[in-house]
Length: 470
Ligand SMILES: Cc1cc2nc3c(=O)[nH]c(=O)nc-3n(C[C@H](O)[C@H](O)[C@H](O)COP(=O)(O)OP(=O)(O)OC[C@H]3O[C@@H](n4cnc5c(N)ncnc54)[C@H](O)[C@@H]3O)c2cc1C
Image 1 (spheres, rainbow, N blue to C red):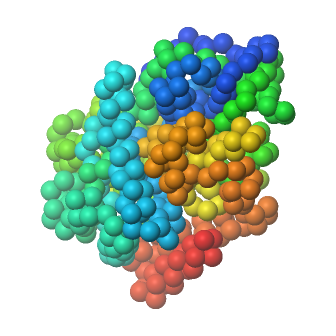
Image 2: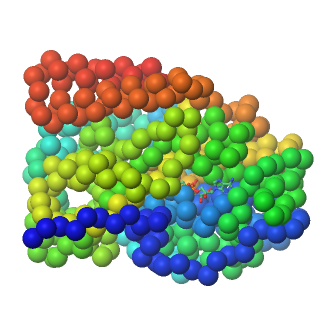
């Protein structure tokens, strides 16, 4: 029996299966608001949500270039993590108590999201099954994961937060090709990304926020944001565009757009899942330099994603229908982790653009004098982090004296003064391509069991490049 080729949904399988919804009006004419948000993804919508919760009288609008969820928020792998990429950088140098407060804020992400979902009646297939960071195929992965565990300990996380599972304990949860061990954490939940972003948009509307779709902001001057057919005057203007900062030159050099690709299998039967595992609804990743992430969806499909690509000049991408070869590579990687999937159809492929900040960790920045601010820079961990960074941005805007306003990811001043900028092209492209090449060589040398000196060479080269980028 031949397997039908996959389809490439417009935005993602997540968005496609919810179907279109009645369009929201584009911005027309001139309007006054107290706060104008640019970007209808998680960051923009969580920020609007907390602004209205804390200051209901504020007039708030969201301007979205396409539809809410068009960006990474409607396309991601659905890992909602109580973690920030670049935590080590953020926590380094903090005194013991400040570090403890920052850790508590990060670990508080899931309980906070759970409280909002319950309060607002949001169903997004939320399931807190934890996460497995596995060594699934070759011995170097075990060393990588054990080094990560040491890193979590050094940051002050306990055994209850991140713990080691030996090969047999891992295999009891997930039957990988070579289960060599894994880090397990209870601080990750699986969600349906599009259900969350759609529900947040509807929720902020109920709270009185005006959401305009098909309204790209094409210019800003003197406290105004300009769209093609209208403009908004607002003393506070907040950018929440993450990897889509191409149209906004002031943002472009702070967050680098990088693509990641995702595929979904056909729904698997309970008998098939019995050969795979994940009965607890855990998400999992294989410690590959190619970066992988997977979840067993509520409807029993497996969603599997991997590191993507960078376009010269840093343009975001939304259409991945021409990338069949790259998706075939991801499918091979998925089957190398789970040979049980041989013969199982990949039915959908899509991709998205995420944002990489130059400092390697997320930020919330607000300049009270000009009323300009932004939040983002999540790398591949923005689903949960956007909730924390949005709450931080709101505390900065409302000048609240809070732990979040003092957190190491909170900055006062103009983004241009507080955030590091990426090097100009062609340097950025060259460094990305070199990194990509070296990571690919590391992966193939280790996966093929190449001679020890070759594996050590490529692992050393990857580590050296990472140090160079830092
Ligand atoms: C394929 C993929 C898989 C991922 N998987 C995970 C995961 O499993 N877990 C995790 O934690 N993170 C994951 N991420 C990252 C995570 O999805 C993002 O960090 C997060 O969604 C960022 O949310 P955001 O609102 O800041 O940005 P986005 O969701 O990208 O939203 C930005 C919005 O701004 C709009 N916009 C841009 N320019 C303008 C303009 N000029 N005017 C008006 N609107 C504009 C865009 O249309 C877009 O809707 C993944 C990302 C990708 C791409």
